Amino acid sequence: MIGDILTGIPLGFFLSFLIGPVFFVLLETSAVKGFRAAIIFDLGVVLADIFFIAVAYFSSYRLIQTIKNDPAIFIFGGILMLTYGLVSFIRLRKIALVNDDEEVIVGLIKKNYFSLFVKGFLLNFINVGVLLFWFLILITIGPKLQLETSRMITFFSSVIGTYLVVDAGKILLAKQLRHKLTPTNILKVKKLISLLLIVFGLAIMLQGWYPSDQKMVKKALEKIE
Image (cartoon, rainbow, N blue to C red):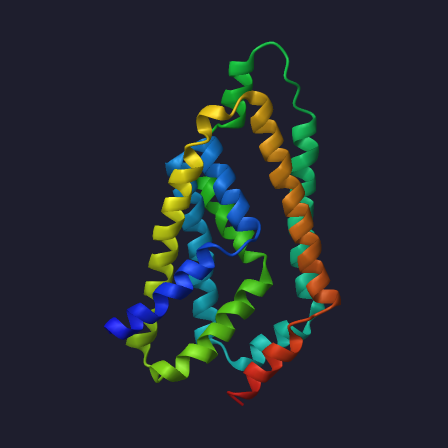
C-alpha cells in the first residue's frame, strides 16, 4: 500500500504543473477571487479527472479507440473552449472603467462558488485529451498493480491527493499578488486568460486535425488487445 502511494506522488506533482488552460485559470481565480474560490474551482477539475479515471477503468479499450480515432470529438471540444475564451474576451472589452473603481472591482471579483465548481469541471471535461491521458496511465500502471481494485484506488487517490496539495500551495502563492490587482490589472489578467483559452482551444482542435499522439495511443491499446 505504501508503495502504491509513493508511486502516485510524483505523478500528482507532474499533473499539478502541467501547463494548460486549467493551470492558468486556477492561478487567475486565486489571484482575483481568493483561496476558497480557487479551491472550489479545483475541486470541479478533480471531479472531471475522477470521472475520466472511472471511464478509463470501466470502459473497454474499444471505446477509447473510438474516441481516439474520431477527430470530431477533439474539434468539438476545441470549439467549445475557443468559443468560451472568445466570448469572455469580447465581454471584457465591453467593460468600461468609468467613475467608480470600487464598483468595477466588485463586479469582476464577484464569487459564485457553484458556477466556479461547474467551470472547473467543464473546462477539464471538454478536453478529451485528459481522458486519453488517464487511459494511458491506467494501462501503464495497471499491470504493475495487478489491476487490483484496492491498489488502483490507493494509487489514484495518492495522485489526486498530491495534486490537490500542490495546487493549494500554488493558490496561496498566487493569492499574494492580490493586493497588486487594480481594476485595470484585473481586466488585463482576465483578458490574458481569455486569449490563452482561445489558444488552447485551437490546440485541441489541431489534435483532431493532426493527431500527433495517435501512434503512442495505438501502441498502448495493443498491450491490452
